Image 1 (spheres, rainbow, N blue to C red):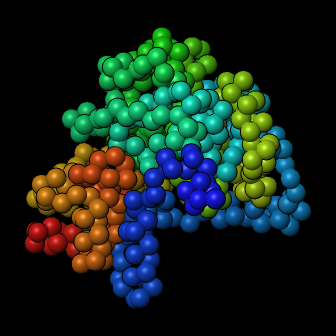
Image 2 (cartoon, rainbow, N blue to C red):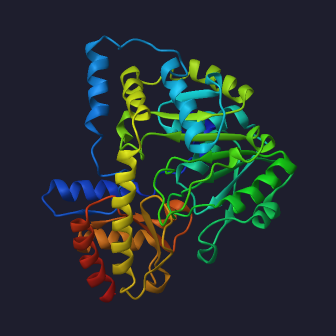
Length: 391
């Protein structure tokens, strides 16, 4: 058997991570004692709150360590229904809720049950790195809608309409966005919803950064507008960002009953239930007031403003002020470097790690995470300012 026939054909469509070289080298340099400033993090730098940890400890002590129902415990699904109603004006029944191993797993499950080989998925560009790869794994075709800084990296209803073909089945929306921090308002989403209803296109609404918005902006869920778009939308969320629970791996979704049933069957035969202990921790998180996520939002807002004040002084770097999440997406085209060269050189020469924009579909940008302290932001920006000035 030839080597190239040993593995499944579908894997040939999957691109290796363009950020692996950066993150691996940063870890190696750190292990060698180098003082690395980490602007690459995709997770809050805060610890999981103690009351959530305590719920997990109690679950272990009480023996809650066996299988649960595949789609999550009845108690957790009830709380998720309440959360959707309170925060998003969405009415879901427990059998419409699927709890999975992180929001990424939730999105992958949705794509697996919706897509056939002939289908196309529309994805605004820049995009979260895993969206097109998950579509490729489903043997469908990702199609990109390019956005610009002029519109804060958001697609308009006109942009959407231009890209729809007879093969279009799904639109993926991420608001607040990784990597741009853009947030869609109600009017923008309403216009997008009208087109999706008219063309019978499913919407995967990735709302994982929902709790992190700035300047008084209110997060909107596209499924909340009317029954027609509700019946076409799968709303995805989780606790990774809102409660600093990235490693606990609890994501969830609300979906039309037939889609939820199909995902339940898929999860039955792939992962079975999410971690039982983490589910008890998730119950504690959802039962509590929003004090922790409010604290996160306030701190990230301060960091965003500080980072913006520093970037404005650097000739050669342009940016849009993010409306949510904890990333600054910077245009580096004036430096004359592509994003990977920029990132590699900055790490080698100044020991600052960040993510090249090529990973998100825009090779003339870089992503700076401000999920780190003001002190680290200051240190890193001092290095970047000096380095860019010397280019």
